[in-house]
Image (spheres, rainbow, N blue to C red):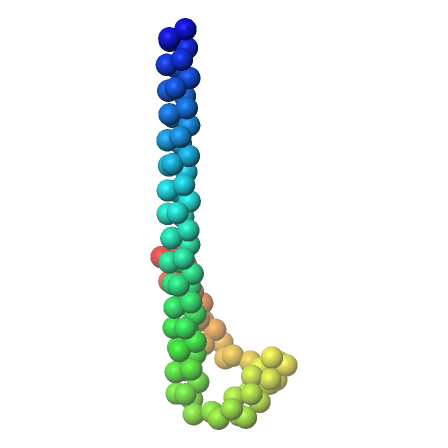
Amino acid sequence: MATIDKIKKDIEKNNARIKEIQKKAKEQVAEIQKKNKALEAQLLEEENMNIVKMVKTVNLDNKKLTAFLKAYAKGDITIPEEYLKEIEKMEDKKNAK
């Protein structure tokens, strides 16, 4: 009987340890998810800043930019072939990483 009681206590002890480890793991996952959320927000901010910088370099005011984007979306304006190739090269480099 003493052996059975010892085994039961060991099982209870191991189950308690498992729960403790699971709790710590959940806390670590939550911490990493929180960091990722902050990094994703930072990434979005950086991408938005890059877009703003690009728009400013072409000196278009809001009205002209809006008109340009509408025309592009409608298909009245297309990207020249040489620039499309340049974009493809950049994407290939990005995908190679």
